[in-house]
Amino acid sequence: MRKVHEILFSPLNNLKRESFIINYSSLSSSDLRYLNKKILSDKLSAIFVEYLTKNNLDSTIIKKDLNQLILQAQRFQIQNLQIIKEVIYLNNLFKEQDLNPIFLKGVAVINEYKDLSLRQMVDIDILFKEDEIFKAYDILKKNDFTELRFESLSKKNLIEFSKNVHHFPELIGNSNISIELHHRITSHNDFEECPITKGIISDSIKIDFFGDEINIPSLEWVITHQLIHFSINSKYRNQLRAFYDLKQIDENYDINWNKIFLKNENEKIKHAIATSIAVMNENFIILKNFREVKDGFNEYFPLKKDIDFFFNKSIKIYEKNLSNYLFDKVDTFINFSKARNIFKALYQIVNWISFRTNIFFKLKK
Image (cartoon, rainbow, N blue to C red; front, side):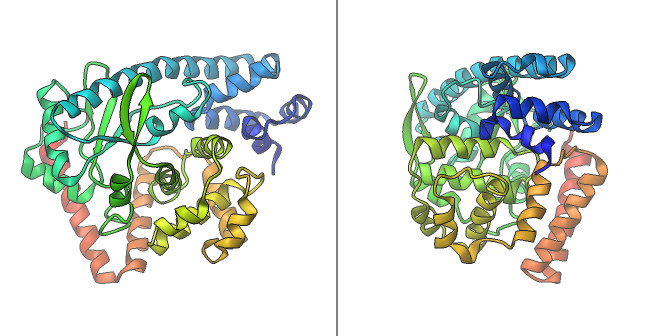
């Protein structure tokens, strides 16, 4: 592994102070820019600031870069407190109307960290059954939540929107925290029917969330969702927090990987789980029993060249721009055509263009 990548994963591997200083001092100016930008883009600043402080490495880091990390960490510490407050409010709001919200992603894993500030959260993702999500959306609108990127949508437009996106349009309230209501976990481009949504809903559990009781997926489904979001949903981009999430869970529990693989009957999901943990273990061991898992489910693990390819994607900095946006759509089209056939792929891409055109000209702010 290049020295810059050893530094990038230093809190995860608990890199010794002396090794960190030697590696950091040998980095080129371009490596230093990459390192700081990658930590910020993947929202790892709080974890890095803690590691640097614990190992008395603050003075080793370029002052301007360190200040940027501290500033982001402090900003997300405040935001985490706002999100916790908002989750409790939303949970009570929905339960008063006999709804059953299941909180996903950061909210589902933050209790695994020893300090709530270490797992930086951006928004709140909530899963509902299909027969509950319209009511949940309506409840938020009636309680002064507004669309973040779209004008108010009619139910007809919401139905059309939900056919193309696996969540409803984001809403924000007085806290300015983005709320995403999900009716499924994976996108329509990847699966006509989401293979994990029903399992997550049926196996949800109750946990104590800072004095309140909320629903989250069971441990096996939390892990599955983390790995699927890392690979299938996010295409390995700007998701290094998933490395740290899985590391925390692996330290806190004896993960039953047999149970996880057996819960997922879909072959694509099994391959995605195996590929994700293989990528995360590419240059260091995260899982306590990684080799046992690989031996037990070897048929789902990718070749070394594929692991290298996806690992390299995960350590790049992905920026939202027009060229990347168009490339994503071409890639989606190619994958769709491989999975089904060219005629269905063409129908999907035409349907997607029609949907986006409608959104742009009629609904977008």
